[in-house]
Length: 109
Image (cartoon, rainbow, N blue to C red; front, side, top):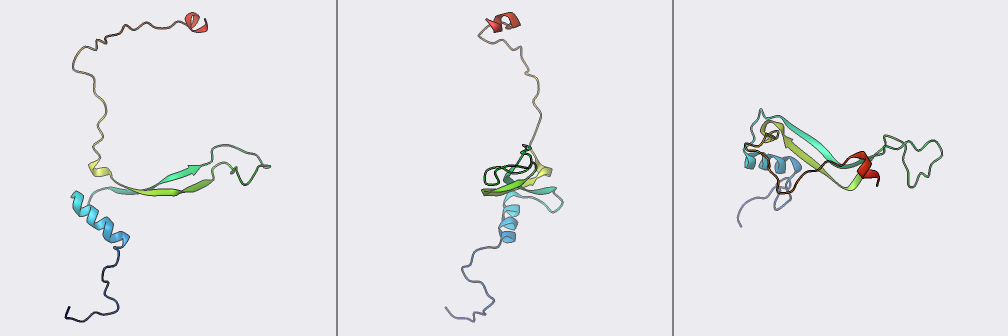
């Protein structure tokens, strides 16, 4: 190989996070004006009020966030969200089994 390699030149190094995201944006055809949201997932939030005397090893005060070791980042393009609410069926629903509602009296016995 002929040429000059400067110390700041990167050769066979891993891509930065920004470069990886940029390549994904190009791959998926996202555009500059798209509404993109970055969220973290794999987070546990304590929802139990443990009081003042609690086992600090196993319990956390209410509202405490714990990031799991396998937490991950989610990048969403809300401009291209394919969500579409369910629509009524275009035909009469006629199941093969019969529907018989259970009364409160039947449920107790």
